[in-house]
Amino acid sequence: MRYVLRMALAAMMTIFAFSAQAAETEYDPSKVSDSLKAIFQFGSTQTKQALNANTVTLITGTIGGTYVQFGADLASVLDDGNKLRVLPIVGRGSVQSVADILFLQGVDLGVVRADTLDYLERKGFASDIKKQFTYVTKLYNEEMQVIAPKSIRSLKDLEGKTVSVDLPNGGTFVTALTVFERLGMKANVVYIEQRIAMEKLKAGEIDAVIVVGGKPYKSVSTFNNDGRFHLANVDYAKPLQSDYLPATLTAKDYPNLIKEGETVDTIAVPAVLAAYNWAPKTDRYRKLALFVDAFFTKFPALQKPPFHPKWKEVSLAAPLAGWNRLPVAQQWLDQHGVEPVTRQRFETFLRQNPAAAKVVQSDADREALFKQFQAWEAENNARDNNARAQVRPGK
Image 1 (cartoon, rainbow, N blue to C red):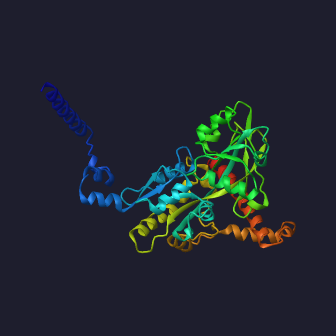
Image 2 (image 1 turned 60 degrees about the vertical axis):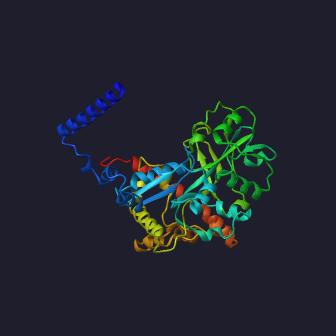
Image 3 (image 1 turned 45 degrees about the vertical axis):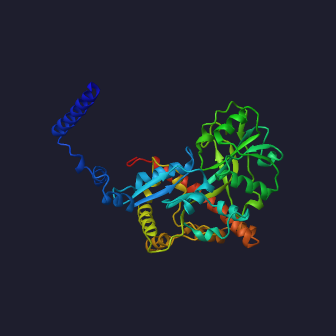
């Protein structure tokens, strides 16, 4: 009985203290925002409808990865009271995200890797799966990082070696196995979560860890290198050129694994902001339209600090071969006159550089050179944006 009385007295004192504080500061929580009003009206049918009507759910990736950071950035910039709320969800990687977009209730969008759908079809897990998806925009390029002892100079040196490619529900294993197949490589592939794999690498239990993610990737940049390890090169071989891009890693990206002044050649695969192919005039399509308008309108803010540097590589109008763009996204780009100028610049580049044009002997050669040009332009745009961000007004 005494315990009950003490609890009741404590509750009353809390209420009185809150009332006194409110009186002193003239603070009325119900007037702060519509969001708080919704919270104070919790339980009503109207509240539930309001909270769900304009909430867009985005499946991201595993903790520490670039997908998660992109989701947090989108929520930070796009949230606008009851008009729009972006709800990022920690995911389990690209393959799981494909399944979540297709089957998980309430998931509107997800970040997936461009080669994942092709992998699922190639392995017979799905048929015509791309018809069930649309894309809002191509995001950024995700680099392949091969952490290995310095005796491993390039990816091809892993022939017959034990290599960890992360867990089989993510995207790293998809890209790694696809690359191995394209190059005709036979490695002893093991599926180990990255943090555990890094420790096994240090202990000499495995020969390399492959990570595919936007640089700088947290598990790679925080790898405690005792001097025995580095990042191995991945050659941009012809069998890879149809689906992958050339990329470069530097000491600025990974000072723990690359010496100052040195570079590491690798490949990259695009990340995609994808959605289910909802029919127009449905409520799910309406919510995607809300998201697209806010995202594209406020996109310039995402390319500035403090948001992830990979946003500087994103070009909203960039085409994505083999994918269909979400119609409302294409309509927004058309209405605002946003065009994929990269292709135009590439054609101009070829006309003005006969030496480069001579390399193009076929359509496949042209596409391969265009991919290299895209990668080069993205890298330059990122550098230019960084330089502009560092220049203060009046200086």
